[in-house]
Image (cartoon, rainbow, N blue to C red; front, side, top):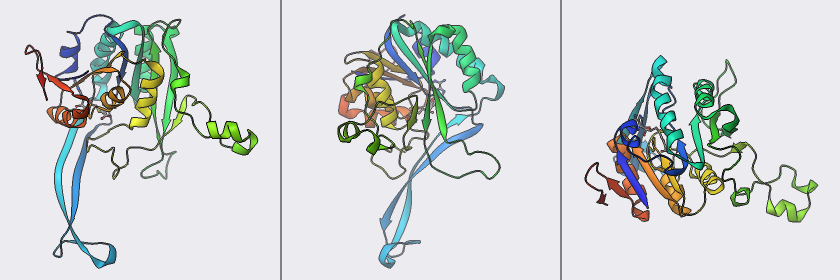
Amino acid sequence: MIDIHCGDNLDVIRGFPDGGFDLIYIDPPFNTGRRQRRTQLRTVRDDAGDRLGWSAKRYRTTRLATRWFADRFGDDYLAFLEPRLEEAHRLLAPTGSFFLHLDFREVHYAKVVLDSIFGRASFMNEIIWAYDYGARSRTRWSPKHDNILWYAKDPEHYTFDLDAADRIPYMAPRLVGAAKAARGKTPTDTWWHTIVSPNGKEKTGYPTQKPLGVIERIVAVHSRPGDRLLDFFAGSGTLGEAGARLGRDVTLVDSSPDAVRVMKKRLAFAGAVVRRRGAGGRRL
Ligand SMILES: C[S@@+](CC[C@H](N)C(=O)[O-])C[C@H]1O[C@@H](n2cnc3c(N)ncnc32)[C@H](O)[C@@H]1O
């Protein structure tokens, strides 16, 4: 079951019951100070078009849609995030896990807040998602990673099924023998994964969409079939797709009607339902 809610997440999740979710993953705006936008283009063959392509054929580019959300919070960022992190703790089942996906700008401040909400013992890992895409700085090391903090509600009892993780290639396969090399090894806390390709099938056109491979690994290892998952900064619904593919129930919340439209379309294959508050939901 995939449920989608449109609205400010604090209002929406305050109505959810204590301990109702086994896995919560959120990817809030990173406080970049920018407006996050993505324009979707379609290129079609047109002899009068403005672009010259392969074999001297001409093409015309049309703009399909521009999607955006604000990512400017300044010093108010933690004041915005903290009550939502407190709710996440309340909503987690006793063996549940919480994942907060940020980058270098706010992750250290957010960790201090999370330590005070969950307790330092509940901090399990900082996962580094490393990628290699885009421009490089000439004045400092180019930041090419995101930070994902994992907290377990109870650090003694939580789901961690490493056998369910995809395996990664050895760097020096000849040193380990053919059978081991063919099997690959288990991932560590540093995950190399490409960003969502601007031309690939996975792309929804929603700004800051995260790669399915990264989110699927979290879902596979940190939850079991039938578990209840929540993402209350859902964007294009990547957690929904990962959860639906792996047989989990997923609740998704976003304040942007544009995000809800993208999720409806993306998750139609899983029978997603958009819930209207007080109306008991409406089928797609
Ligand atoms: C970084 S994007 C999430 C991207 C998503 N992980 C994906 O893979 O597509 C952050 C999302 O948070 C949403 N958002 C920001 N403030 C919100 C709020 N107060 N309540 C609900 N959603 C909010 C934005 O509309 C945006 O879609």
